[in-house]
Amino acid sequence: MDALLVLDELAEPEVGILRAGGRPPSPGSARLGAPAQYELDLGGEQDDERQPERHPLLQGVDEQPREHEHQRGQPHDELHAAAADHSATVRGRARSRVARVPATVMDGKALAAEIRAGVAREVAELGHVGLATVLVGDDPASHVYISLKQKAATEAGIDARDVRLPEDASEEEVLALVAELNRDDEVDGILVQLPLPGQIDEARVTGAVSPPKDVDGIHPVNAGYLYLGTPLHVPATPAGCMELLAAHGVDPAGKEAVVIGRSEIVGRPVAMLLLQANATVTMCHSKTADLAAEVRRADIVVAAVGVPGIVTREMVKPGAAVLDVGLTRTEEGIRGDVDPAVAEVAGYLTPMPGGTGPMTIALLLRSAVRAARYRRGILAYPIL
Image 1 (tube, rainbow, N blue to C red):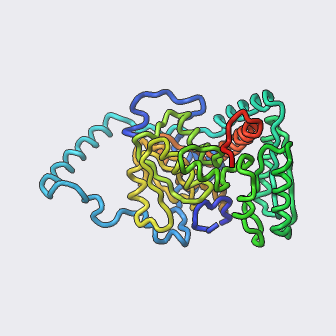
Image 2 (image 1 turned 90 degrees about the vertical axis):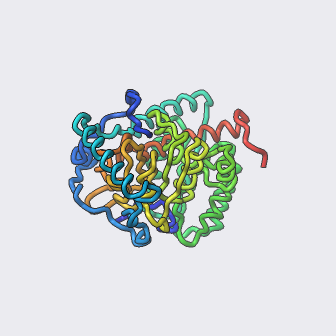
Image 3 (image 1 turned 120 degrees about the vertical axis):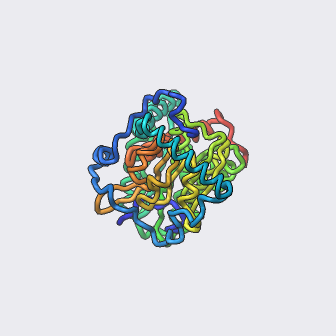
């Protein structure tokens, strides 16, 4: 299994019911059919009986509720039994009258296309936006990602500069290149593709990027402003997740949100964005004792850990909005962190692929435009 995106320390590296209001689906929405059709649409995978794979560092994450977990805070025995019987009767009647409605697809491709069109218009208005990407080494996945970013930037009218260094480049060479791009007035935004080769300190390199040019939003200054609730540059994938929720009318305010994964590029920033949107946020990770119990009460789930199928149908609250960020290539094809059968219970679900991935590139381009506005003084960036 070749993990393309592992977004946690693992590799240290709506509700009520969302559909109850009768809100019509957004233009980027579609109804997700049965899991087999879902798999066929996304890549022809047919193995929906396979149990989710377990990452060795997630062995401590118990996906089943602890014994008697369901009894906590419930009435004493007699009242508990009566309430359970009544609840079962009501559920039985509801099932006899209401057919299950499959999840609404949160189509990232459609929404990303709208955002990219808007970026192209903004670039034309500004006259010039320069974006430099830096790739060090020969990592195959990084080559693919950089090619996609370069292509999307060029299509939006951005002056995209593709800078590459060999695998054996020294840390000093990379830092010198970053310093040169910081000084270049033709470059508004800089993106250093991660991971970097082992001889290079990633934190030192990403920290060397000028904060107003840090389109990835991972410089300590940008991360700090996000933490303080005044975001400047924000990592693209978390920003894309929030755009998907907004486009489908999912307001996080007052809702329970669970984020699986605590990486600096997805887990932590998306938790901060959800918190700023007035959600009650729980972060889960490799030391979470009962992952299933945490996820089961969530109105919004963001899965960003890179473990195929770790979020199962039984774990998801009916009507929840589920965003699948983790992407892993297996022998059977591309797998997300969310099992396709979740479509049977969720209210909204991002497909894999075609959900959060396209949004990442679109929000990166938007960040490049924001960087150009910072550099021209159209938007104010704090004086450092």
